[in-house]
Image (cartoon, one colour):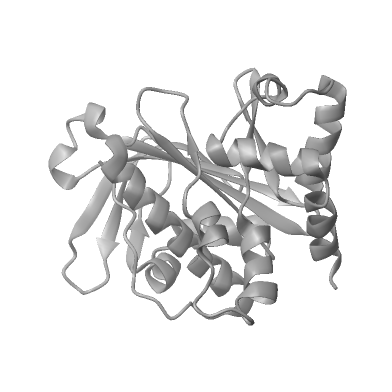
Length: 259
């Protein structure tokens, strides 16, 4: 068995760690204090359990201001599903796929979606895959077009030759190769920033691979949250496949819609 799978099974073997995952599955993006409120255990002990879950890539911590928020990372569970469950069980069991389907935080009045994936690549290559028009066209079905300077306009353009942009916005932050923040809106809402959502790509070196965290904030209700929850995993799985294997997955192009 590979070392990564060993860490996942070891982490899942402990009841406290499973309960912590349950809490994050119920409500993602919790602080240490919020998690401790549901676990009859000292903060230091809970911190140690979270460290084991992070080492197994089952939990990812993201700093927001002074807070450190913890998110369930469904990728290792999905990999176990594919390797140890899917080959023996048809049709696929729904439990783990439901875990992967949605990660949600409640930091503002509008819902947000957070997705974390690990890619065997370099930060610069991940950045280029997010910003290069030809590469995004290959795995996304839309070309991301901009000069990627802060304040510049960007477009999410169809690849059917029509030149139509389904999403437009502004480059809010651009720090190659670690952070990209963009606003997302419909072409008819360019003058309505209140109708725009916001997408942040955080790219971090993680040992010899890359941890990519995508946060889609200020979504307009459950409809847009549902679109993001189904769209982003498909897009990012295709991105991961392209960077790791040179091939895209056999699926339809996905559009993660703006407001």
